[in-house]
Every structure is written in structure tokens, then in C-alpha cells.
Length: 502
Ligand SMILES: [Zn+2]
Image (cartoon, rainbow, N blue to C red; front, side, top):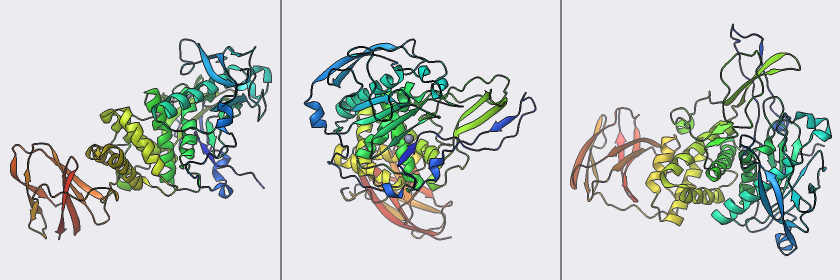
């Protein structure tokens, strides 16, 4: 009986079709390293978390009442592209500070410390080890090649992210301790809940040591916090629900680092030698993406979405290896989702948008799809910000092709007949006249919905005067059917039903 786990994999490799260019000096082999865990069925781990109940066996009250010691440590502020490592303080290690264990995290090397032990200090409360940024692979076979710096670096970033972002900025009660393991074989990283384990891999054919990359560490930890908030989809959930999970993990990472690029150091591919081909991608994922391409298209996104091209020479068999990091739905759709959040952050700023994201996640369930999720954002705006960002949220997510709910939420106020809005002829076949009154010259939105609540068309009108307006709208592109025309400005909206006959 296999021990199935709920695992969210950060990184997979995919198969692809290659037409080797004539100028290639050696044949390119496309590599498929999709992890075997993908095919497991973690039925035994279906669970629902009850918010408010700690699911860690760790009792934080116990820890917080014990003797704690601050320790010195060397870490990279971001990753090994920094000019050098820096000396920092690890606050509140449990006991005398000689073991890498605190309130939020316990960290160690799977190779040096075993599966359950925290790493030991150099001397007293001192974790100032020197980094080794040469290829980390020998640590797989030669234990003396494993750097003690790595577990300290992972510890520091989880601890700081928990304290500064989740607790101080967002006000989340982090009442669990995560077990971090570094020096795990392979490429990438993953999170396991409810066990609260993060594993960072040494890097293999396409990647570097994930324990040295701050954003990879934050991404994985964000999954565990989301799990604690009740949202941790696994392989039995739909691709949309899993894409939400990946999208949030990237968004929370990027908003904390204030950098929409994820994993730039980790995916810097090893030496190509004589391999010739397209340029390598410079990041694992990005939240700044072309909205024409990275678009949900109301449920019909492009099937060509993929990211993270890497080509390298493999000394083992003398072949060039090529792969996209990923084209799995949950990752490429997740990028559309995180890109929409980044669009919103540019408009409203991180303080508002981080809270909206947090409140939305808290409402998600394992059945939530994109449309439900947009509804949860609008709900969060209504409850926590009096609905003042409703129009911006709707515009932003509509621009990424997400379907907006017609009925936003139970708490949404009834429509306000603010426009004295009339339409004719009705039914119509080619055009419709719209007449309305305005008290301002603010831009109005006229949105068209079908009876399933899908927004299918949207127009902006900026009145040139206050008072009665009349515009002619085309219905040429619409199939026969019944539509709702909704006029809105700010949080005022008013709807009329229109029948189109062909
Ligand atoms: Zn992930």
C-alpha cells in the first residue's frame, strides 16, 4: 500500500514536440519528467479544515511560553544573485538557540539531519555558515558536499514571511509550525498538508537548489497558509480550483517581494555548451503577462499556453535536453489568475488587494471555480470596503476573460434605479436605443449578460453633459436570445431585459 500524500508540486516538466533545427550541433531530446506522484489518488487525504482549530500537533502556546534565544545567521536576502550573503538575526529560537527551530518553523537537511531533526548550530546560538552556490548535485551522493547554509536560508525566509507578511501585514493567526527539509533529490519544491511539510530539492537537470530562492520558499509556504485557511486543493479537485491555488501562491509571493517575476535564479539553466535553440526563459513564472494571450477567454483559453523554456547540454549522455517547465492547466491557468490579481494590485495598491485576496481565499472551497472566485472577491469588497472597488474588480477580471457573476452575492444591495434607463425597440434585431439620465459625467459601463449570467459584451460611455443621454448600440454580433443590459457607475446599477431576434 503506497502512502499517498496531498502534494502540490511546484514544478513539473512536460513533453513536447521538437523539430530540431538544422544548425543544432547535437540532437535535442525533449524531456518529460512529470513526477510519478501526479498519478496517485490521494483519496485517503481528503479533508476539510475547520477554521479556528489548529491542525498542527504543535502547541504554539507551549512554544511561546518557553525560553527563546535569538541567533546569528548567514542568508541570502533574495537568492545567490545577491552581491553576497548577509548576516541576520533569527529571532526566538526555542531553548538555547542551538537548534534551527522556532515558533513558525523547524528546518533541517534531509541528508545531514535526517527526516525529523532540526539542524544544529555551528557554535552556540550561531548559524553563520558559508554558502555553496556551485552545483549542489554532489550532495545527492557525498554528504560532505551538503552545505549547512541551505537549511538556515530556508528557515529564515519562512520565518520572516510568516512574521512580516502573514501576521503583521495581513493579521493572520499563524498557529502552526512547518517542518522544512532541504537537500531533497530532484528539481523543484513541494508542500504537504495537513502535515505542514515543505521540501526543497537540490536541483537536477534544469534547475538549481530551491532552498536558496526566496520566492520559491514563499510560494510553497503560501500553500500551507491557504490550507490553514481551508483552501488546499489536491489532484482530485478540478483544474480550475487547483489553478486558483497556484495563482494565489504566486500572488502572495509576488506582493511580498514586490516583484512579479518568480524563480529567476532557480531556472537559470545550466551550461548549453554546443546546444543551439531558442533563448531560455528568465523566470519560472511571471505575473506580468500579455492579457490577449494569458486570458481565460470566458472558459476557452488558448491550449498553447506554456512557460519556462530551458535547453542544456547533458554531460551524461552527450545530448541536448529541452523542456518547457510547464504547460499543465493548473499552472498556466493559475498564471492568468495571478496576472489578474497583479493587474488589480497596480490599480489599487497592495494594502487593499492583499486583503481582498486573503478574504476571497477564506471563502473558497474545494469546489470553487473561477466564476465563484470572482464572486468571492466582489463579496469581500462589499463586506470589507463597502463595495467601493466593485467596478475596478469587475473591469480587471473581465479584461482577463473571467466570467462575472450577474448576481454578485447575497449581501449586495438591490439595484438602484439611478439612470431612469429605457431601451427600445424590444424585441430587436440589429440595434437598440438606450436612453438614460446622469448626474455626473463619469464613465458608465453598459454590460450585456446572457441568462446564465455570463457577461458577453461590455461598452464604456462617457457622457459629455449632465442630464438625459441617448445612444444607439449594435446587437449584430449577438445570437437570438434574451439578454440583460446592465448600466452601472460606481456602485449604482440598473438592468433591463432585451430580446434579440434574428
Ligand atoms: Zn504551487
